[in-house]
Image 1 (cartoon, one colour):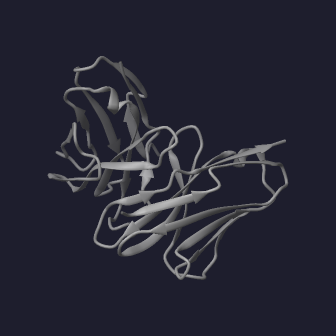
Image 2 (cartoon, rainbow over the protein chains, first blue to last red):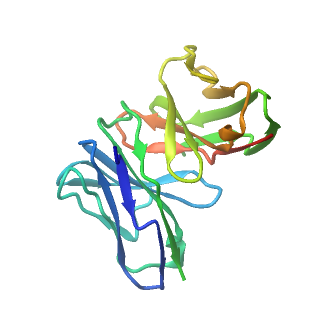
Length: 114
Length: 111
């Protein structure tokens, strides 16, 4: 069981560069989420999706974009990387939303913007 | 503002000790309280609590929710070095996909 797979595991970007963080799940979950975790802080929700073709903003969406063309994939795009986006990014999925079921997390992508 | 506060932020114990981790919450339209264990990578799910006063158990770990006090505790008995991790508490809200996370408690269990 692969669960939630994130790539890459690590990345260093220069200010102003763009990149896409990949997330795929093989559990046929409808709900998918992107979080960022800054050192010593809790996870903050960036964007989420309740199904293919539907996305919505979380707490901290500025500077990010997402798309959900399939049930399995939920990529996160940074268009103009800024040092404030240095963080660990986690993708998660759940079968149902509204926290009726727990979210399953990927191993994270550690991103540094220099 | 919705918030979840965990205490202590850090805890060092010896193998065999029993620990209690605390989580208090102030969120609008509270629905459930979740506990996750985060070792080096992904947070892994431990418990989801929706009803007050009902203890959930999994091996040496147990947790209970007190809706009157807006809090939850996570107990770990007979701790082992493998329990060393950051324990995250999160509150969910009705009508929202957002989980409000606390900063976590870093537990270190020394042999």
